[in-house]
Amino acid sequence: MEKIPIKHSWAEPYKIKMVELLKMTTPAHRKRAIEAAGYNTFLLRSEDVYIDLLTDSGTSAMSDRQWSGMMLGDEAYAGSTNFYHLEETVRDVYGYTYVIPTHQGRGAENILSKTLIKKGDIIPGNMYFTTTRLHQELAGGIFHDVIIDEAHEASNLHPFKGNVDLNKLDALVKKHGAKKIPYVCVAVTVNMAGGQPISMGNLKELRAYTKKHGIKIILDMTRIAENAYFIQQREEGFSKKSIREIVREICNHTDGATMSAKKDALVNIGGFLALNDPKDYEEASNLVVVYEGLHTYGGLAGRDMEAMAIGIQESVSDAHMKARIGQVIYLGEQIKNFGVPITEPIGGHGIFLDAKRFLPHLDQDKFPAQALAAALYIDSGVRSMERGIVSSGRNPKTGKNYYPKLELVRLTIPRRVYTQAHMDVIAESVENVFVHRAKITGLKMVYEPKYLRFFQARFEKL
Ligand code: F0G
Image (tube, rainbow, N blue to C red; front, top):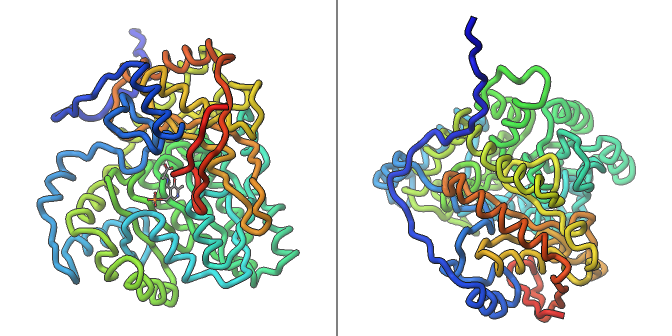
């Protein structure tokens, strides 16, 4: 009998209809540009960038269906048709009852934090995210990391490094009492750990535990379809379930979610807060009027809500997710094969270079990840970003720098934007920088903004 070959290809389930031309620059031009940007890739002009891996946020290519949806914008101040389409879609795909649109994820985080957090409350989470933790703190809460220890080790191969350590959570409940903990914030996937997923098994155990103590679970569902893909690929009993089914099952174990639709949901702007509790919804839908806009637009145009509704449906396609994460893994495997240290297992939205092992001659006070991101930009015009001591910021009480275990450079892959050949260029540039790594020197911070310093801080070469 003829043997049927197994197909491993992750080829894109779409073809390209429109292109955006890229500008090529010289190393001398890029040296000047990064110096003028204070060695912060956030302060570069996009026109000076060749391949932009700063973020996967708002950088996706929309489909022809999403673009045609933009033409169906109902720009009424109140009760836009597109809002009801979005609401219907969130109910259909995620299963939450109430939806409040926001301009992006952090808008939802602000409303959620103000709705659920009282001064002195404790908010456990599976690792911090920059904007999420800040909104919790601004609302008077105190964030506590309850992710498993493995997540803080770049080379630990645990398949679900996003899991919550229930012992850590239990210790918090015993110390502060469940009344002080309004909810556990669960990120799917965990951005700062390298796009690492949480398992369904862990989420179920967390649900049982929190139910017993009257604590809610609120998802940060920014990359939920990517998390669902890892569950499908790695967790027993899920290989035959669709991404759509797994996404729904994740949401079923929770009480609400904040969403930055600029990632999974394939739009350039938008987000929402989703809730099941009518009381919480009442409070949140009142607050949104103060900070974002009426509860049927939340800072978005009707057309943005339409594109989001369509994008949500596209995001839970199995073929889409296979190609999306297939491309990330393709890049990661190449970089790994050059002997470059990266966070493993490879996560959902990017490759995270381990700057501590990449640049062992620089201690953390010299901002190794920030320096490495600048060196990579000079080498090839590939823009990445720091995810280490700069992103981590300072303890608001003591004013001291946090020293995170993970000191990473993130090569974030926008969805449906770059080709396999671009991935090859990126990998070759990372290799080239790795070969010449001994020449990379550290940085000193010369300007530090008060909030989320990584966005606007400036550096000089030591
Ligand atoms: N939660 C997670 C896990 C995120 O990655 C982000 C944004 C947000 C919340 C906030 O959403 O940007 O729409 O306000 N992450 C981007 C990034 C900025 O580059 O990782 P937002």
